[in-house]
Image (tube, rainbow, N blue to C red):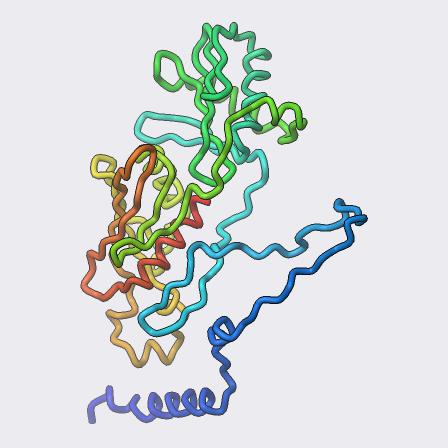
Length: 321
């Protein structure tokens, strides 16, 4: 007797049990609730209330993109993934291809006064100051700050003759790490470096999901490379395989949620090869002034649908927000 046939009664039994449970209504598809949901009037609080006593106790993340019908019917928009908590003022160093800078979890208008204070404490003679551009010229080099790719973050550099100054950057790292991230209203008002919170977003163009980044390709490449290296490190789930700075692309393996969470029955009913991650290439392309798009191409033999592409890009977007 063929050994593979021994498993068939078990598979059929499990399938019948699962079908029976669904028929009796034990598993409620909550996607239907979104279709039937109605809006209610917002709660109105008295104007005499003390606003300091009210806030979001359990805030709900916003959905990364609008609803789009999937191939299998309705699918509720998912909120953004929470990758890890970042405290205000956290400082991380980046070292990529001979370039070095700091990423600070604070907006440029918060960091700028600290750059001025750092220059003063270090005895740097300031020769030019441009708050709008975020550039501080000194006799010992240039300090600069600009919006980072992640929401509410900044990229800070310390350069001499156009190259990173290692000692200055190390001192600046220590200084910023030790600073409290508070600023007076007057200090914030004096700076005019605004930040757009929607710099990382999904877009659906010509039947294709894209990730749109409001950043130049080199900035996007550097930050995305750092985040993929830090987070795509799990075999049989999500893994960074290759990176090519010349072509500005990355090759990753990614297993979708449906394959990860399919369970025992899904594994039995599907070929083994279908459960392995897909091999995918993420390519960064310039798209106009100070904008980059990330496109996904499937380099594996297994299917990777439009919904799967959207899921992967939502995961990548979460790393950059």
